[in-house]
Length: 325
Image (tube, rainbow, N blue to C red):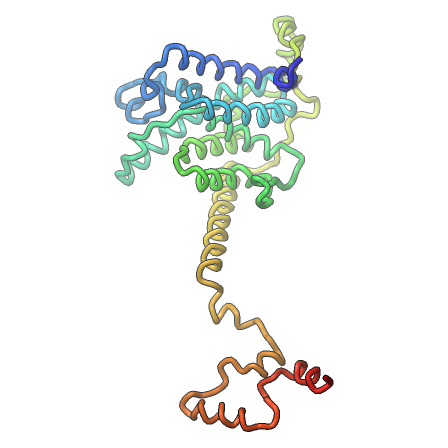
């Protein structure tokens, strides 16, 4: 068995099915070469031309091989970890609803920007790819995972709850051409699901266990990689979605402010006022960087220093070492 086959076999069942669906869609693109713009997410086409199929095709189609490869690997890694925690049935429902809800959120935000502010760019923009669902899964996995902090590309550590938001900002800085709103929609959907705002769309854990125990799901239970609903249930902290979204957006704003402050310091320095707390002590007094008043005759002061038998400008520590020599 090759390494690729071994890696694929280790992926849980629902995540593997999602990967297969993405692969089939990309195979259709390669074989028939349909116009990609006819399948992307374009809010104007969906809302005004009633091309509702774009809600699904925009998530399954991809721009190129690298695009589908990156989203596929991210889905396998993040979806696989999440599926082991919530089970295959819940993961399958999460991905199915995620395709619909991330697209719906994208449409809603685009329309609100246009209706309230007259900002039409998002209504005309085309986006495509599974990354919105990937960010939804990331928001769920980072909240349900045991780790309290996560590393963002090995650059810095953030709280697990803020990890998807930090990833959103960093990826947008590195690759400005990617869909910020598509990724943001996935985070919003995942956060709402974690805090129970979407519970009406999902069966309870008791109902999921009943389904698993029924005869109709026996074939599914025996499939390799099937993950059962955990007995301890999903670990969810009490709270509402508004608090979660406020914390996430606040963390993003703080992160952006810190990055901007760091860039400003690197380019312009801290400034005299910010450096006022730095005390050089004996060295500062001895070197006297700004103690001579030019109006009282700086040249005379320099001449008197030259006439002295020993240079008073030399720091005391260096002067003592010179005398000892």
